[in-house]
Length: 350
Image (cartoon, rainbow, N blue to C red):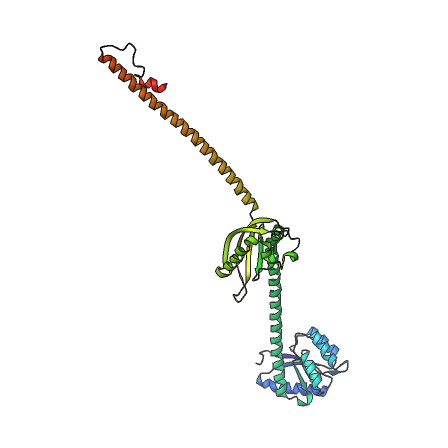
């Protein structure tokens, strides 16, 4: 595509004849809408100043100049004009040099004897397009690198936070491979099992930290986790590295890789020694209360039985007195004393 505005070209060339030749070829293409503004110098030092001072779109560069020669000419120009397309036009048909210069960033390498207006026009337009694409790609890559760097920093901060939570958790957190070896542990796990460093515990087989009486149960649980995906609040006895045992409550779930294959388990272990001691104390207290209740119930039952026996005896006494009074009346005798049980309210109070 031909640009709408004139292309500003800087030609650094020691041959006045060849520069006039190039100027003529470019003028012939103006009728096709290919408009250029050409600046010319035969000194590299002057050309570098023009690059710094003026707006330039394309550089046509000869390698053999009064003040510079060969690859050094291109290197110095490229360093000054890193964002400009450079087309090398040389009288040297050196393929090795041409390849090296293109690898170092030149957009094209033309041999003077082979240059014509069509070749030159196409080379200029392609050079501008390739350089623009190159700049856009570089800008995009830099943008991506910035995003990656930012994301990496965010991930590092996030990882540090997660690691801090992981290490400061009040419960033990661990990961096991499929053989039962520890691959990750936090500080609480070290404290619970009596390890001094992470390296000491990592690689240790989890089944070695379980009493023999609990091994089969633990293996069964791991198999259940791998089959069902998780298990919660399983209680068993664990063993520290000094051989002492303590009760733990474990919740575990399956750990999978990116392909969904099981690679181990991850879990949380809690030392429930204090809870077990509290439950024991509570049971003792409950048992004591039950004993007290049973004792008081027995005493109360005895009291009730005594009171029930007294009431029975009182009823029998009352019937006896009544029968005696009836016998006295039948014989024509009148009882001298009143019935002592007549006023039931008084007897009930007594």
